[in-house]
Image (cartoon, rainbow, N blue to C red; front, side, top):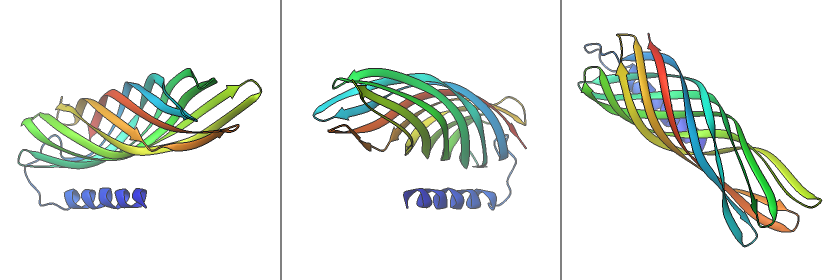
Length: 208
């Protein structure tokens, strides 16, 4: 239900900006596609029985994004989708279990809103929803469990985008993603996993 509500909200926002009255064209107006690369550092809050610990994960991520935006005087609103490969991994012993995690594909939808500091510099904030595939293992002696699950959660952040030319946009941004908890059972131990990640990306886009 939450995914449907967010998708509906994002669609409504895109409809509003796409049907707004025409104004003087800004380099940030219209549809665009781009590519990005970045680095993520986070942890998986891991609970095994009464024992809780954080398993650190970090690594590089790269992918593509596409969206649409519109400026109203100095204010900007828009929507954006992305898909990326996320190469985070890490391991740690938690409650006597040798535990490891790694990520795979990630994708998300976001709404962006910002302010034109100058006609070619946009400072913006982002709020969205992210889905990321996590793989993990936990083992103690001959007892082991593995999983491959897509975690989902809210993503927040912001950045600065610069119009290099009328059609070429560069950006740098920071985001924080807080994923929902997932319950697991290893042998007779019941626990939970709750990942989060801090990410810094740089991107380059072409506006049509």
